[in-house]
Length: 444
Ligand code: GDP
Ligand code: MG
Image (cartoon, rainbow, N blue to C red; front, side):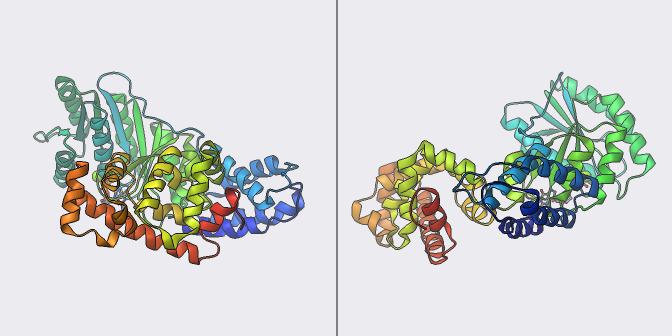
């Protein structure tokens, strides 16, 4: 994800030298390179220029504490500015009326159908009565795709009617949704491979008939410069109230998000991170900024650590002694992570590469709780030597802690994974152990 920008940025901040102050001289090289990196990530030129001017403004004369590396101080300014550009706070859906209509727009293949179903499922989980419908009357396959997705999301889908046109269909589904007492009606539309007048006329007419609370513009994160034009055209026509950045799990360059945001002024509300119905995340500007820059929210992590200093120190120690990492350490670590706000919260603040790996481990807090219970049901010997836990011990542990044997298996294989991961970081001198050692008062 965002490989280009991320890799480049890590190199760039190394070039900010000198101590005491950030000056035009010591950042000019870095600014030039960020410009190239942004363009390389397919950020539109005016968007990039605007951004750089703002960074320069903020950086000029910014005082750096004596112990802070100037590269990091500069990085923080860039990260902050990028988050500000992306909208500052996470933006929620604004759902007025009943039913509140969410209208999808975007090019064909942008991910409208899939991600509308994901949003419907999310709303359903929030105990809202969500109903999906398609106004794509030309392609029966489109409705079928939506019906299948709706079914697996456990959300109602309004069936196709006999021959009708798009606008008649829109009026009809609105009526059906009212009859079904829907809280939210999600309307999927037909896209085209390129922006054309017919599509624009259609989306405008749909918008008039449905008067949506939200008009979401779906954009493929892989899309380059073109995203600017597409976003602008749609925004001039409807206007767009939110952006959904799809396929962010791929080898995306991220520029599309920045550009679409700048052109429409509408916040990115969701990020699609896979083909499955649960692969949808709320968009957090600050985290996006941190991850796009590949450095993680180290400041945020340090703050959390400060709130739980003892935990952080132990955590750092465990990381420095990976050879002895056993289930006792894991239990201590789970509890520490809990104090620090949960593994998700910690992982998101780590540098991109590392965060990605940690995130693959189980992030579900409830599950962590059950795993904790399972470890508590083990004998000291078992905790120190997880290898000795075979089938009968697994059954005893499961029964003793009220979890399924399967969870004990998961716990053990995860533990093994973590142990290996830590061994790797310990070997790598620039790895996690060192980073934490430095951050939390150890030597590095
Ligand atoms: P539409 O034409 O705009 O309705 O696009 P679709 O919803 O049909 O999506 C096009 C393709 O992209 C499908 O194969 C989806 O499974 C895939 N897709 C959509 N969103 C995502 C995503 O967030 N990640 C990945 N990996 N694939 C996605
Ligand atoms: Mg579709």
